[in-house]
Amino acid sequence: MSLRRPYVRSMDGWWKKNPFFVEYMIHEGTALFVAAYALILLTGLVYLSRGEAAWNHWLEGLTNPWYLAFHWLALAAISYHTYTWFKIMPRTMPPVIVGGKRLPDWAITGGGLAAAAGACLVLLAVVWGMAR
Amino acid sequence: MKKTLKRSNAPIFWALFGAGGMLSALLGPMLVLITGLAIPLGFLLPADTMSYANMLAFAQNIIGKGFIFAIISLFLWHAAHRIFHSLHDIGIHAGIIAKLICYGGAMVATLITAYALLAVGF
Image 1 (cartoon, each protein chain N blue to C red):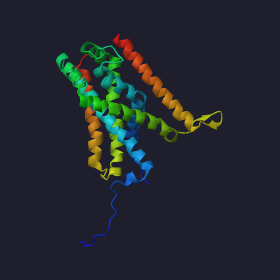
Image 2 (image 1 turned 90 degrees about the horizontal axis):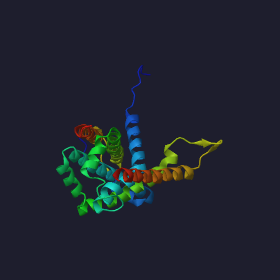
Image 3 (image 1 turned 120 degrees about the vertical axis):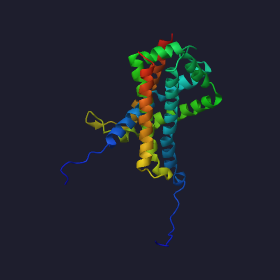
Image 4 (image 1 turned 45 degrees about the vertical axis):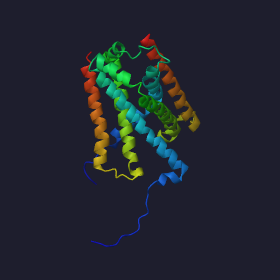
């Protein structure tokens, strides 16, 4: 066994030193909100399968201030995920060639964001239509 | 060179990550707004939108089942993949145990979702 104890520079908080990596950690961190939100929905689904009283209990639980605070944060985090998802998209998908020219980054990002806005409005309209 | 190349399982996880990422990017904000804020606070939508009768009918419908299954499971596969690949960045070794916890968690949640969707009936 070696008694050498070489100095190893700590990597704690390495990402805080560069705004690029701070942004990276925030957009990776949105996954925690996506996971937590999906688990809340899963809990609701399980309660739904257990009958009306259980479902109403779960639904009432959502009015708890902690849940409301979480959902405001989740709304911000997942909206930010939407923004970064399409911002990165020009680099995560193969180049799109239109008329012999490569589709510019802003067109891909803008198209994605427009699609997300459209999808959200369609979802709201469908839910509204089913509820009436 | 080996006769049979060992195929990587990474594309499967990456595809699930991509599908969940796309779905949550497209619908996530509105879903959170509806289920987490509009219904509990009573704005934007009719008060009985998520009543037991409405949600049961939705979960018993085959399209509704598919929607619920896709949302919950793909959101979790997306998050599991992203969290797994961020572990190294926060100083946690992303080894086989971390992989089992991340992807295994998503798999267990997917099975519970499928079970609950069968349990609500058709």
